[in-house]
Image (cartoon, rainbow, N blue to C red; front, side, top):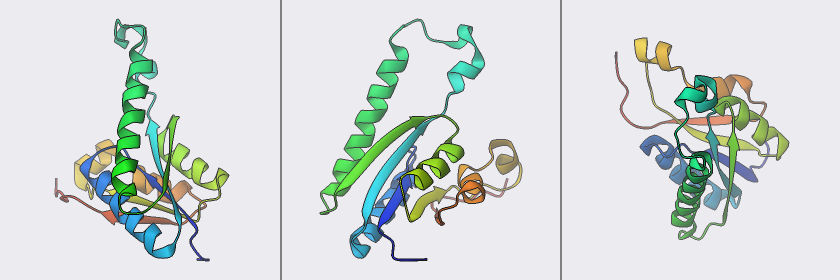
Length: 151
């Protein structure tokens, strides 16, 4: 891999993704690289149909504003360590969006958590990290954070 200048850290606000973002910030700091935190909002409500939508017509706007605020707060916590961080939010399939965003914006590395699921939970839930590794043209560093389960 060539010199790493831009690192992308996808974050879904789970503890493993927050820990991976911290590790990505540390790596970016040591390498003198830029860091971007990316949150992808899965479009699940649309797939469920109109009956699944909340009554509040501003629900989607409020939800995205809340997520954007959480993303900015996470970036601010990492910036205190002397690192400038950008943020981005997209809608869609997380693994597709992560891979596409990394390629389109010239990232050299994606750093993301894997939950270490196995067995039936992995089969049922899948793995955003695994799909991102398969789809991405950019190298992906996966960090196994959190507890692995044997189920």
